[in-house]
Length: 256
Image (tube, rainbow, N blue to C red; front, side, top):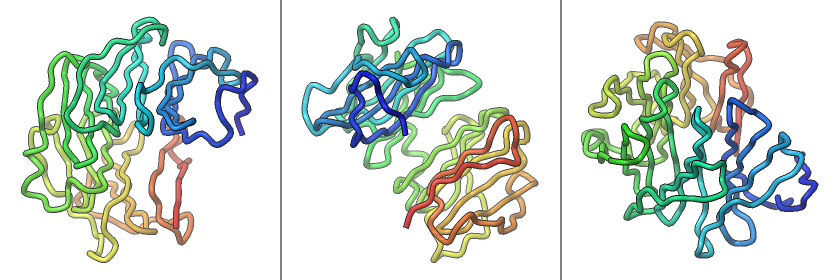
């Protein structure tokens, strides 16, 4: 358990996201909810101690996601609908845009950090190709897929930049940054839906894993055919990550 020497990180804090500055992994940012506010905490010693660098002006609104790009610019989204940036490692913040609805998720293209996606609670998705200067609502492309706006989990492939969206609908794939989507025919029985999480193996985009309920499904041909992989437990597999240095290692989050 991380114990903050400064006592800034509360023991009962909800930690929504952890972000590292890759050029200096000791510089860590947390998106947390504590003392009834969303907050951004920063560490410069690898998590041994933290300082608060931002908090939401109104109570009960969270800071739900955070990202640090290759230049050290920090991006964050809030439950009030704010998309913020800091170009001085959290010392000062700039509001880039207020969205009508709150924002609960930020996803970034690993091949081009200028391309970002933000999500609102109703399932609307907005895309920027210039780090927030301009935005495009790509939600209408989901209209033909019933349930695709509920329980969304977006994954961006690190090689192809293809998008995979797991949701109540099942699994969708986009090869054009969300302009259009295609159904991926996973062997998920209707009673096992929704699709909860999806990931490709680092270095091999043809190997895809998808979770639904307590089952894990695997494809080695880019999604054409599927098999049932070994599930780590009898519980719902709500999130998983594959080790980029050793694809045989997977980390999983399970729930009741």
